[in-house]
Image 1 (spheres, rainbow, N blue to C red):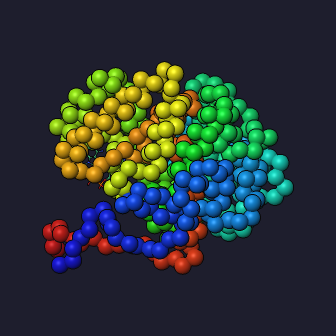
Image 2: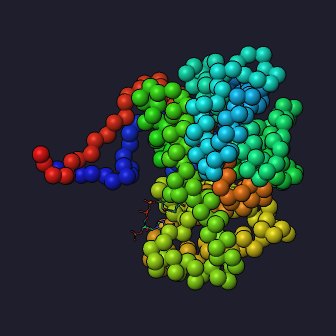
Image 3: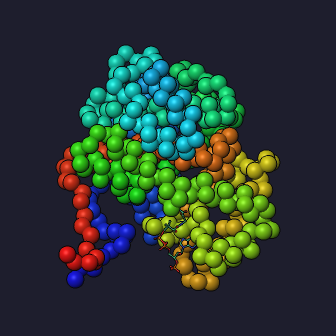
Length: 368
Ligand code: COA
């Protein structure tokens, strides 16, 4: 009888040149470049590296294609009228956005060199305006015009969200956080996107599928869950008993543990420092202290049990996003705004030598 590997852990299903997650060394690199160096570079530079584009055209193309068309805005207003979670809005609108034509000051449609992934780049370009627009509408505010003169991809989002002053500290913290989230190899969302790509479906299907998996609480949804947990605890002095109660009840501490990293997630280290800087002297200081206290108690309890579980990227990220004025239900959508480029890199890579991904399950039910 074959041995079934539940969750496919450790199984290699394809080759990739995009990203290496070294769980033992606690290192992450995109195309051979360690994230320690990548976080020093502009966001779109790192995107270009991840997608393997050496034209230097991407930043301008994304800027030219980033505004919503009238049709996109109508769709957004309809979606806003529902109470759907921002990730559901993203999943639903991804195939509907006007991805065939460009608007703004561009002189062409752009992205043609990406072949059948081009429409996906047009969707990715619009995500900041879409998410910021949804946020404005949900909070009963007017949408802010697309800041076509702002050259920085993430700064355009912060301006259109209009929730916080995009000062240098916030811009940098937000950029670094987004760079750390562009890509993470064959995680659940990326694998889903690749499975869909392997059916030769449109790139929008692949992106919407990736977003659907990213929304799960055990994947990208842990950011929202971790911060809500800190809010529930409320105070650093209550952290230890909270952790003990959770562990006794078999409830997971969100933002802790990782499939690959058996040492500290290298991204978590950066995000923790940024969260500390951003929260210092603000009303978020207590939330940061509560998270730190949860982390300390969790580590203590895991050491007792001999388990190598540490904070992952999601644990402190909510502090950065909250400093940007984003409500918790918008965290995963903001994550998606960066991860979409990882999905596009995988979509293109998988198309080069496509094979339908279709594993099997052993039937153990009643025989006919
Ligand atoms: N809190 C409490 N216990 C945890 C835990 C957490 N966050 N993460 C793992 N564990 C425990 C498991 O219950 C399991 O215990 P057992 O050996 O007694 O059965 C053990 O540690 C191994 O965990 P497992 O779930 O098998 O690890 P995994 O490598 O398959 O899963 C995650 C990794 C990410 C799914 C898991 O750590 C988790 O659920 N974390 C919280 C969600 C999260 O932060 N997700 C974002 C990931 S970037």
